[in-house]
Length: 315
Image (cartoon, rainbow, N blue to C red; front, side, top):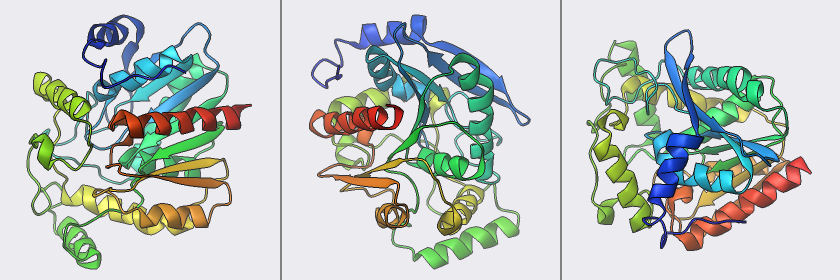
């Protein structure tokens, strides 16, 4: 297997950008509410397709390294920016506000993308790969829609969240009340437009190279920037979290948990794994939230686990 490295990341940027420009096929998918930006690439000797459901703040532009790496390992790759972020449509006048009307809107988009784009270009084995909020979207999608995925790989899935010192029952009450009172499009308390934290203060990754590349990408393409969340997004997310105990997925699941995660609550990962016989959970020591953008010593074992999982569910 080929593994991209931090050491060679800068020197490989020209090659990665050429892949993005010349190999990835990029287009927009029409949905009832707006256009979703998506991309895909099919290597000549592709054996499996990986469909990516990215996290909040994220999109195709941030995943260039991973897509290039997967492609070089003969995986067909498909990715769509979620509504409200990346290059997809945003509902509110302030494009920095992270917002969704109801959480199932995300999974409905994923279903549309899978049917109209993925299945139109690929008829072989497929694995759904997700990160953070994208993991919540993926899980809800798998629980509610008919699909033909062989397995699902979750990186630090957002099955529950930290509320930064505010008791969760109070945070839920405030989000629900604010939404009911007509403030669903208003930033939740403490949320602001996009800001780029210094590396030393970031809670996402311990890889300086990957973090700086992420921030550079968003600095050079301001339309990718996304700020904090609205009360509407928070209320929709809490509603999804409350539904977790009623959702079941029958295909094989792999949950990668980041030991030092400060974004999502890892207890929910163990809870899910304990009630699904088809789920495997692995905790990555020393890892922050963004496992796909971590240091090589964390990221390489994660990707090795992904490749092994793909092989096991598609053999």
